[in-house]
Length: 189
Image (cartoon, rainbow, N blue to C red; front, side, top):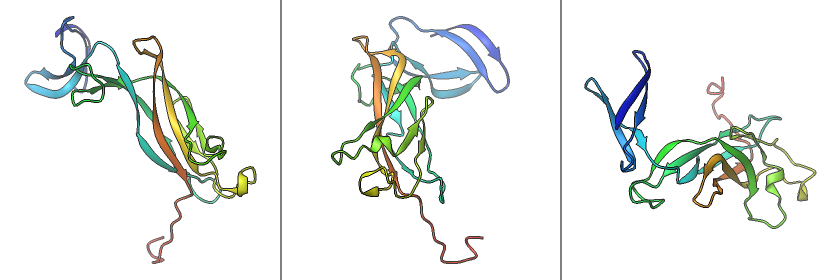
């Protein structure tokens, strides 16, 4: 590893351009400056090998009419398969957050339940906003807007070895509001 250029330096931040040898093994490297060491701070990698959506499993709750909504922020992380080149092993590491397109897909639990149309919406930044609480006349049996969906991230620029965009998904349950009742009046004040 060779520091090629110091882009900026301040008491709280140092931005540098670093060159890695072509045969450098993938992995996380320690960074040291004047005796201070930041362990595993610099990822050395050839490509982003796969994505993970975080959190991998999450719980959101409906709201907006009488109760507050339980929002959820998702992120697409680009991972290296590490020195062994095999995904899902102990030497894998996060490279960086990846720009991704976001969507919700149906998690099939009940035939024709179409949860993806009712649980809420996800925006271009991976921010999930749940639907409103209460019975929904548009749903079969006037069910609430609860349900289970996949949160899917598709990388905008990172591709696999076949040239297809990298993608990953996470499991999201959207449930009824967080009902709270305080038995002691002084606690609720």
